[in-house]
Length: 309
Image (cartoon, rainbow, N blue to C red; front, side, top):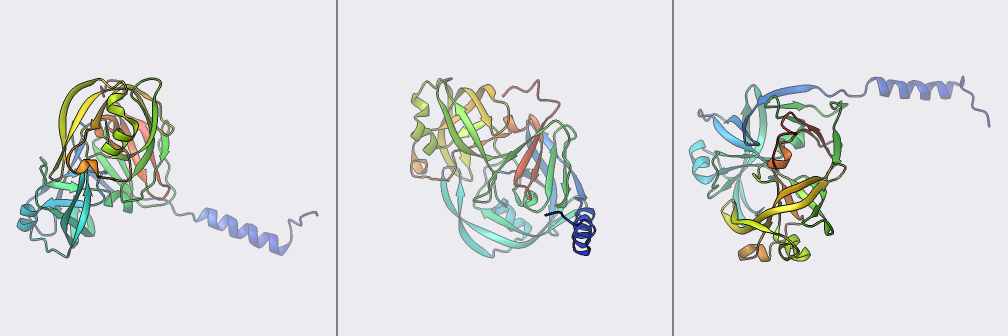
């Protein structure tokens, strides 16, 4: 059947399609937020509500929201709205939550925010600011310029030369698919948190380590220590992995990896993912988190060639 391209019905449909294309929502830049780079970790200077003292918060994509210690929350005057259980590395604990707060990031006001209150934080910063920014705005982190740019959701163009990696977000944090090879002949596929709050390259959590026998399958430990998350400490062993890659990205060879050992809550802890990718790997890239497309766009930055991970 031959189409009638001059029929009124076809012309109306064509006009409708062109109108929708012409008025596609363009992404707009909303804020430029400078940050301090502490060996890859991103520190933001913020003000909270009417509290006069600026706070230093860690930009932590391994957390699904903001958090302060109880002592600082009391000083700021936060009001507790409810209590709940929270998952942290190695286990769970009960926390308080304050709702309806305003976070001042320079001239940009981030309103109506919930803040988790922990008994203690064991961090060098005043607290953390998690994925709430990235959930509400296209969030571009530029290590070369030491700034975060926020954009409204819409038609956004990435810089050339990068790679998009899809993520899922089942529990408030961004999960990327990855493959770890402790030795050349033993690839282990898993799902890993994209975690700018972690100081290592990669950590594998106890269930993944135990299931794949990573500590006893050719792994050469170079050091042992512990990881602490919101008051829970878990023993770890660190060494080199043959390679690690996450979806669509070139494999990183001879990379440092930390494996979580047994003991305490970690033996029964089941976070629902296999580990987390930290800033020693992440900071090699400028990246853009696009919640609307559920992807993170990675572009190698100036430190890529010289960065030792």
